[in-house]
View 1 (cartoon, rainbow, N blue to C red):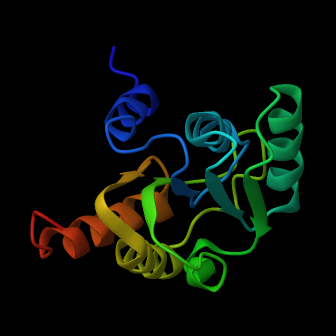
View 2: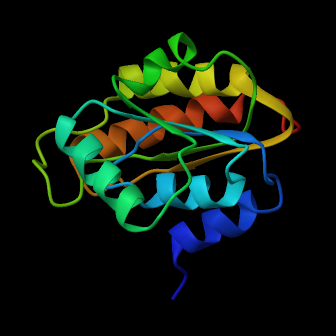
Length: 160
């Protein structure tokens, strides 16, 4: 069976290296933040966003327990405000939409903020950068969110 998260990482690894700047737009429990931190190394930068303090706590714990380099900034704010924190270009960005695994399933990513966040993420992309978006349509908001994202991205130039 295809593991979408591992597949995402294999795509990303073709675009990032030590010293790059990346963004985890949906921090969750920090698995992608940890992956990014170790991949870009001491000289890289990782920006990670989540609106739930529990996500920041879980992520910080995961980073410390796994001896991640001190190259990350954990931000308790919506991903649609990413441009207020990221002051340069990124080589990769990742969205894993939905809700915090193990958390309150009534708190989900929302179509309005997610589409705004994706637009800002696209503007933040450097040359030869990648943006990956995993949509989980298993709940009502996720299905609507996915449809809007598909529509939004379908009108972009394929090279962008």
